[in-house]
Length: 375
Image 1 (cartoon, helix red, strand yellow):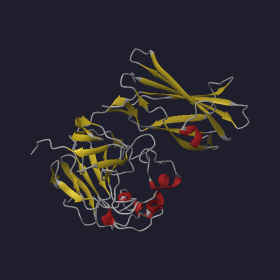
Image 2: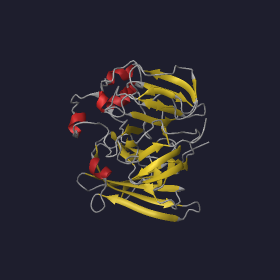
Image 3: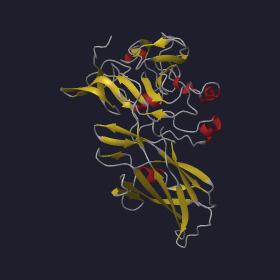
């Protein structure tokens, strides 16, 4: 069984009073925090919820991390503050409004492979706007390694770019589920924490043919042809064996999403989708599939490598691509993402190709399917 040991301690500085109610409390989410391994080292993907319980706006001055090994010995110490070593989080969320909460994405997210991550001690420092009162909040986090239970292969074949994965800056990681509209809809955590956007590209890394595009073409929804995109209509393969839990393929490939649809279907942001239950607590999610392309039905058993649909652009999709991820449930409101490692693929590194027996992929990687010889 996986577990997380965490606690908070919040007090006023100087002259702290142990009987005083906490001014700022902090909670680490999700409940189970995992260490993900890659060629670059170890990665942590989690958030803090900071709750300002005072009647004044507070400034986030500093966040400090101390890393301890199994013997309780200090192995590493880092910090970010508002003066010298700033960070994206301190810039984006410098203040917390009175009697409110904010999400704070863990800024210490990547470590060398040899750093022991037995216990991580975080210390947050705050001040009043007039700089006359100072506060401190502390929390311990004990992350654990997660081993993917399901044997997974890449769900898309060909020259594939991970357009956006789940690195520190990705939109999948930076889903603010504390916003009022999500809270009212019942979302309590980040269901897409370990998501990927798989996009088929040419040798120049472009995902379309024809005239060059600019970002505004997609973000301003300027019309173009689905057929210009290499991904559109390409087969989607079952990443692992299992049983089909959910199917939706009736939505048009119009790259449109109405948030009101979430009231009836918590998976609606994906437009069309297939969810496979691997019968071990892991579920594969395939989003934005092409309208009418599903080859499977709910309850059907699928084998790894079966063609289950085609890539489309339904739902919240800038352009045709496959959103894939591993989760611990078939829904979204009560569901968290899980680290996923793929078997038998190739990394395309310019003129060099590296065969990977089992490994992780993330934003910017260019990969291709590799025949494992399995039948």
